[in-house]
Image (cartoon, helix red, strand yellow):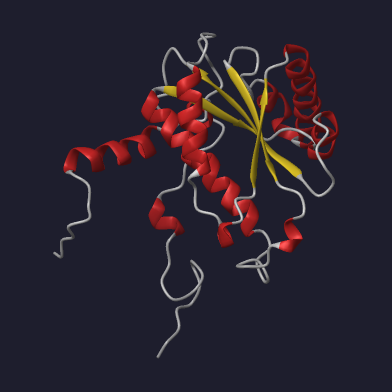
Length: 222
């Protein structure tokens, strides 16, 4: 087995893997405030994410106005109802799920894609969605850093991006992609909440892996 002088110590490596393993999409918060220094560290971690062409397409809007937070939550509730209507047989089951923690979390961040993204073609000429991939990496960085800090994060995607953009006076061409609920929690879920609630089960990695062709297809014969 080859070794490298660049790897972290065993304790440091385990801390990284533990943060990944124990990260949870949180919906329940303690209601306690968040230390501003921790919020700064989380945002800096997000800002250190990889981005295609170093375009850094993420934009963060911190929601500190309680009235505005309430209006954002109303947008989420509207989409929750619309999603439930589209669930057919699972409508009642879906409505029982807690899908956001904006009533208890310490901080609300709206994460958005920048405007004028068409100017950035490095790495995006055939894959323009790489800007979204870059912002997703930023959110994941923040999420893992938060778990290491013992802070919960919930990603809310139930909203109309155009309506939220209008509410936040976002420029044409920008797009809100996430509402993040952030704050202290009383405990972290032992398993992902949707598993705990019986909504779905995570698939094993082996079922999603393949070699040389699409999973479950016929591999190329030499």
